[in-house]
Length: 633
Image (cartoon, rainbow, N blue to C red; front, side, top):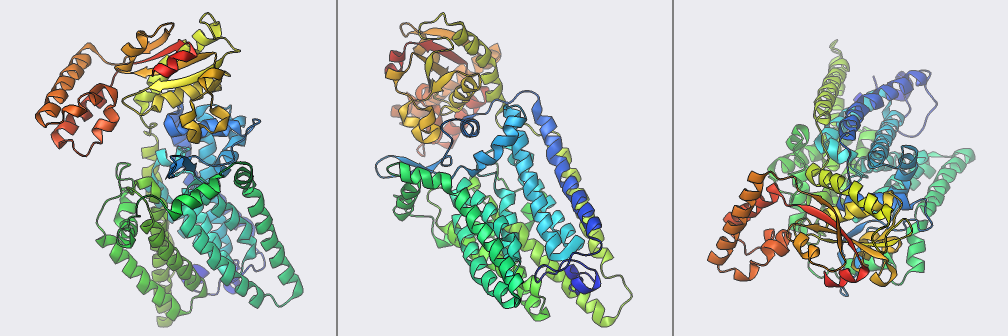
């Protein structure tokens, strides 16, 4: 019987021992073929999604534009040393960023080979996700052979479908390490079993998670300490021969060296900037300015993410908003897991007991980490919680399979003990992958309307700048890109900056966006030869009235009927604000609709009027003029 069902795998089937690395099985070639098949099956939905999103062309917005700027900078004289800006506002108003740039560096080679386009960034993202998938299945092969590969593949299929094609093709920093967090947990499990070959894998996966998004710090550090302590004891207890101990030490040394290499960029930034980003993060979390959500809220968040029904049905993103939901299914799942852990101990199934130990530690660390969230618990802060929920379900089901197999063995029944379980996993894998593939074939990028508007503006803007007829323009011009956007907080402005940089223009943003753009893309008006401004809605008329400014591009996707409806909704909104005694908010109708929509004093009926206005949208234009125009915005 295979180790996945509780037998002696290394003796009876030749699978790699789950208590360390045994001799390679005689059928290892077939095992690798099976591994390749599983990776191929899981890759189909994401490859289909890449085809679906290739056309029409995507123009990255806001954070996505910032990510592509950083990826493009990897091969420049000012490579990225830290991650994207986070919600870390210090007392002096400065903003810290996520710890490191590892994700940018990993995306860069494929991005360049694939052509350096926005789609190339999506290709690089998918390949990074598939690399995580292959690594997770490889670890499963080491720990339990093909049967365990099938179990992990089924778990990943459910999890990937739950995350969705957009999440797994989008190079957004909270999304990139999601599957690598699963790899990290499985690698820690292997290290706890004494398999030191996985030390470099754990270091790599953990570093990618932590550098990409600081929300991973608690679980990665906590599990890392567990791996270091328990893994060291297991390794040196089970390696009586000098050559075994030397091999273990070599892998540990490789992990240490790899960790140092991966953390060189943020350490360099820390030592060459004052204050450095790492010390700024430390300062922020020591005194965040407002209290964290607390242990009770953290436990509730954890239980929401342990809900197996939402995982299976793919309802995990909550409309990309705040995390909400019932805690009861998660509490029941947690109870089932606890019972399964006790059963595994009673069965003396060492691989299962060790995995339960790692999962239990992850649950504790996750609850503590979630309790330390400062501000609103937006979905992206705890996306990795769904991966934890998938692993909890996996180890619980595995325990049940082992229990049933042991019971059948004791009864000496002739009923096949492995076939039904494998058949069930195959069916779940096929169904989940097929459904995911269908969904992936219809996926589209986030806010395609804003992306297409940028696509309409960029060609005319590039042509006007390249022609050089406007003072300060031309290929040798130094441009300051700004935006006046009361609707989308500069979402399309970042896209314009990114596209002009892609076309080879020397462009930069103003000083207040240093945290987002980094020093490589910051410029003062005094150092610019011309300003390029993206104006949205009412800001267009304002810029048309500026001296020396030229309108080089304009786009309005609305029909005549939609323009009339927008004007009516605007009048209704102003009347509603005045009727509610909120006259002071009336200027925001044109000057800052985004802030107005999020004002807590706003009645719900009034908020729905704003939603209607934003769905219709407003025109967008690009202006080019002298740098002095910036001071007037």
